[in-house]
Every structure is written in structure tokens, then in C-alpha cells.
Image (cartoon, rainbow, N blue to C red):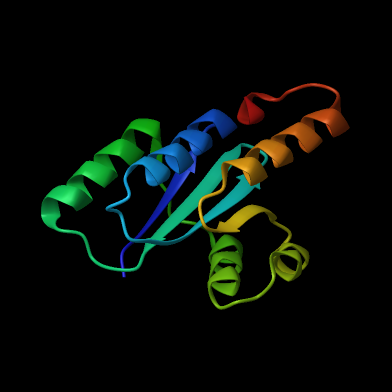
Length: 130
């Protein structure tokens, strides 16, 4: 199974990935995981079937326009693995001290709600939430 893990600078770019996944129905998305970190967002897209070379290149080019390929450190790798093996997001957040914003079907609403609650709590909007 193909998976793409990218680091994105802000919420707007993360939402563009969600919109792209909804618009490209030919992509066999198994799940998308979104984790917010202090300095940005980590997005993992796992596909349920391989892509041909053209599709892979096109999708990778799209992601490269928005962010950079990311090799997560061990704690984040374990959190991503935990979510993939069925652990609840709350358990994963407690165990690995990460902010799981979304896991499953690409969901714009969860990202927007997280951003809104975070900004309300801070009283201002940091760059990563723009």
C-alpha cells in the first residue's frame, strides 16, 4: 500500500489536500491522518491500492507544491502506527503527546473545528493555523 507523509506549514494547505482528495475520486484513499504540531501539520495519506506511475507522479507533484515529504521521528511514527492499528485518537494523543486532528476519511470539518477552538483558546491566530 502506498502512503504519503508530508509536512505542511498551515491549516489552509492541509485543507487544500482534503479538497483535492475529495475532487480526485479515482484516488483509492484508505484513510488520511492529520496531526497538528507547534510548527506545522503532518498529513499522512494511505491508499488502498497502488497507483500507476502517472497517477503517483501527479499526486506527489501536487503534495510537493504544498509541503515537503516528511520522515516522522519515532514518537510520531508510533502515534501514526497506533491510529492505523485501531487505537482511539484519544489514547494515541495521551500516550504519544500529539494533537490528532483527524483520522479516517478526509474531513474538512474536523480541521476547521480544531483551528477555531485552538484560536479561541489562544485569543489570536498563529501562522500555522492560518
